[in-house]
Image (tube, rainbow, N blue to C red):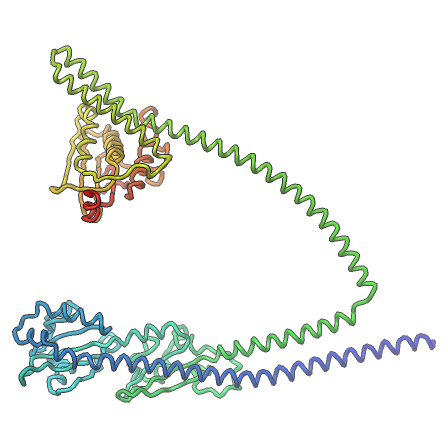
Length: 586
């Protein structure tokens, strides 16, 4: 009985001491967090207020600098001899250009020159020319006074226009008025990207500039009350509901904000900023979170060391050792498996590379077959014609056919050289190419097919030559493919027609339009081996090869269905400018 009492008494003592220690840690945590919260809140609030005061001073200084910079402009322009002469002689042909040159240096929104009748005779915004401003305050006040006049004009759609104006005199006669519109809206655009809400009020207490354009024309109280929850001022004054410890400067919908006011030394203007306390709370909460984490770790360590036993610690170590050994075995198996997979992957890559080479060879063979099919067909036609001419004892005309066959053989050799160059782009230098001559040569290439069918060919060409930098043989190859496709598309039409338009603008554009059935699948049109022709008529490589050629020449080949039916292909190539012409001549 005595042994049981002696064992239970230390256990009760230890339990009491543990509870006392935990209670003291909790009390200490509450005291430290409360004191830290009060100290850091006051400190960070003061630093936030100082930064807000610095920002509002900077904003007001920038605003005042902009006003002063533009205030001197009318005085200088009123003495400009060219403007005075223009008003005296009523010759304003160069005045607008002169004002445009000034506005780029000054940075003002716009410059306007009015004659004595208030008519706009020169302006950086040409849309304002000839407009009348005879009754405008900035014109009337400037005519009456011999000083620079500043006017704030309220616009009908909301907002304000700020204008400096001054009359122009010569020999005691008033000739007109020069006006400078100050761009103060750029400050609103700059303020839109900050967290503070900023407003500028005139001497009458009316907002003339603000973070939100809806505030213009309102008083401060009206702007705060009428602002919706999704507006900029709500985002600017967003604060936590438990901020009662702070001495709030103003409230909006029950939320506290820091309000700072700065007087601008200009016509009694004032600038007011509303700064949120959110940054203060974030900084305080960051420190408090570290303190809470520290006390939490301290409590965790206390529970850990009190509850941990030697036997449990040994068992944990044994389990961890067993897990490590099992993990080591698993890692060894994974390493072996990775080596095997890498070896298999290397073999697969070699097989894939070989398959890619075979596929490239197959595609090249198909391309050669497709591109040589047209010259061979033309040669067959010319040979038949030459045979008939020889039978009719017309050798001169037969020699002409043989000459064309020789040209086709040369072209076949050029095509094979081009197909070889597909694997090595950039080996041949570009030269100036006359698109009209290339078009004529391509039409000559298609002459045998045109003789076999009654197709109406409409060609619209510009009067001046259209010159591009490229490879003439490859351009003709693209043209032949487009013409061939257009002819094939009109086989089922009763009145087949192909329209060819060559135009020159920023690019050289060749349009081939047919009256066929159109294109069903535009997305797959330029894919290799895609064709709508019957088996044996084509392999579907012409447009894919043509698109690649045009891309290599720095242009693009597009296709669409025409509004009146049929297909429309457009080839756009960079037109050769004067600089390229000089380089080509050299």
